[in-house]
Amino acid sequence: MMRDQLKKMIEAAVSRLSSSDSVSVEIERPTAEQFGDFSTHVAFVLAKKMGKKPREIADEIQSAFVNSEGLIESVSVAGAGFLNFRIKPEKWIESLGEISKKGSRFGSSEFHKGKKALVEFVSANPTGPLHIGNARGGPLGDAISSLLEAVGYQVTREFYVNDVGGQIDKLGESILAHYQNLVGVAHTGKTELGYQGNYVEDLARRAYEKYGKNIPPSDELGEFGINLLQTEISQDCLAMGIRFDSWVHEKEIIKKKTPPVLDLLKKSGVTYEKEGAVWFAPRDDFLADRECVLERSDSGRPTYFANDIAYHAAKYDRGFDLMVNVWGSNHHGHVPRILAALKVLGHDPSLLKTVLYQYVRIKRGAEAVKMSKRGGNFIVAREILDEVGVDPFRFFLLLKSPEAHLDFDIDLAKKQSSENPVYYVQYAHARICSIFKKAGGAGQIDFDPEMIARLLLPEEVKIAKELLDFPWVVEKAARELNPHLVAYYLMDRTRLFQHYYDRAREDPRYRVVSDDPQQTRAKLFFVGCVRQVLRNGLGILGISAPEQM
RNA sequence: GCCCCUGUAGCUCAGUGGAUAGAGCGUCGCCCUCCGAAGGCGAAUGCGGGUGUUCGAUUCACCCCAGGGGCGCCA
Image (tube, rainbow, N blue to C red; front, side):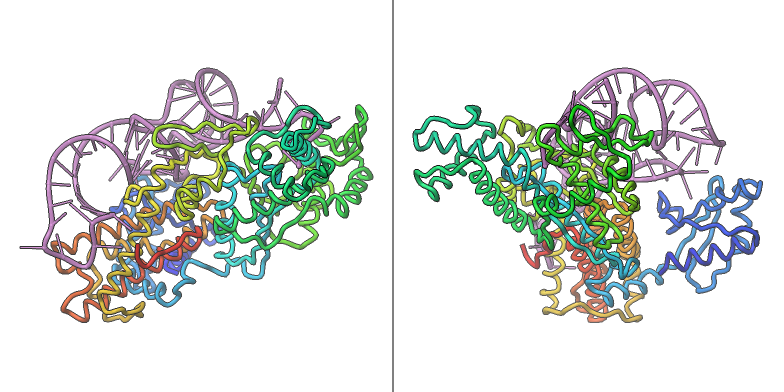
């Protein structure tokens, strides 16, 4: 809107200078307020092409600029060639009407309308409870899905269940060993217990409740175990507020999809045999030292990697325009191999994006809680979730960019004060709701041009600018698959609102509910816009926007 | 052996090829006769080191140093 308008106006001015080549003008928010509302460094870009100094070009653009809509208050050239634009304050306030008009759709766009996206996330192995490491992928994948929906995609949220392979056998053996302990029978399987942790004992007990003294073979126990664990994991996801649209089982992939894909790869000449195993080894320089096994030397069974190629090839067959994998960073070596295999199979690797997230460290105050997956003393996601509640849980996991290591401070997440960013944002929302109640329970008020004159306090114009920036934040976050941008946006804008709110204590011009019905209506409209944006942002993150706390 | 991530304020982290690098916590000092103090105001401190690319590097590339983590017919 405002940005687009300005962009067109600048581009028009540029084309008046040099008819030959058109540049795409990038509009940005300047670093400091004094430089205006928007700026562009297009003069720097043109400097090389035109063989002139940026400053000169900027001056020329400034003179060629036509303020066609009466939108602009001033255009200036600063620094080495920045063009700075200031929008008329009343135009900002007027634009707020868009927020009340669009309501919950404000921030969303139809940019990718008609396209389908698949987001695969969590996909934790059902050989143990969902731990905090896997769990980061939950809110992350869910929020990425919501972001993609906000820019118009039709999104499928998918969980890939790794329900075959040696891990399951090992789980079965472990349950068997504990089972035999329980009923006082000598171990028949491997003496080693394999999987550690109380949950295996628990599974053995539950198996005992079902089978009694007739101990089933380990593979049946493994099956029994993963079914229970899978159910638990899906319940954990629900408790995190995540609802998957689709569950794909590796068991099905291996049956139907893997054999033809392996055939194709072999026929494509990208495999060879070594030490009794079948290897994937495309004659592709960048993969030279990244060969890996497709079929095991011992059993001839396809590896996880082989099945994963087949699974991804099947994703392509399902016709998505964009596929996103949200994976733990331990899969980093896996990504180029999958892409290479997909390329061999004739698929476009650029449609598949992978978000790799680093693992989570749990802290209580200053103390880091030790965690080791192998040793069995991992931290179960559900414990943290139950302890801090779903909103702080999600918010904290979304607060950092995925590739950053994340320290999850449990004590902070549990605090119900402004120290805790979740409560801070939710509190502002509740506070606005409270103001509406004070005003007699009015709902969102529509914009009316009469209001402009009553909403020109500096903080109001500033907040209007920030609220109207929301769609771009959403767009950027979606493009970068990075929900934490939304979280930071919410924290920053909440602060602006709280400062504004507080000024009403000493200055009646800031009061929302007052004796002046015109002022009250205008201010209610205004804080209603703030509330709407907070609500929409929280919605994308999957966090509730409470009316009262 | 190979690979990935991270080094920004006392702490936890944002951010950007450009104009004066931000926030929260913590610290210190203030503010409730007030639309919710579950809040607000003010103060102080910083881009790990080096080389290169560039008109311009905290941002990009390379090297080094320091943390964290992963992979090698598990998934």
